[in-house]
Length: 161
Image (cartoon, rainbow, N blue to C red; front, side):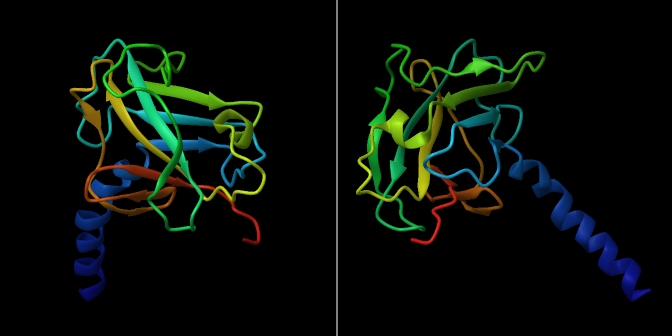
């Protein structure tokens, strides 16, 4: 009987949060600073503020100070400006999924000197005018962290740093 009760508690606590983990997908998983990367944002997850938007932007930068750092560096994008910087494209066949690719690799895309380590991608997903943000509750997720101000940090493979 205890096992059945435990199982139901597990379902109640875990299943609702499983979708939250998938608000972000990084391809390839385990990417590092010298890899090309695609970030996919699912507007149908989390607070769902960006469902139905015609344009979604990723305001983004990198974290270079430490693996659990939150200090944005080498920022791309102009908050509230519909200027194309950080503009995401809709994933084919997916109405609420959006993607952005960093090519030829993360270091080059952000123009980070080789003397700086890159531990995380910092980001906020927003509407074109910046009045809406797509996010999830603060906490640690399999792909990274969301802080109390709802900034999102996607962990990268930082090698042996």
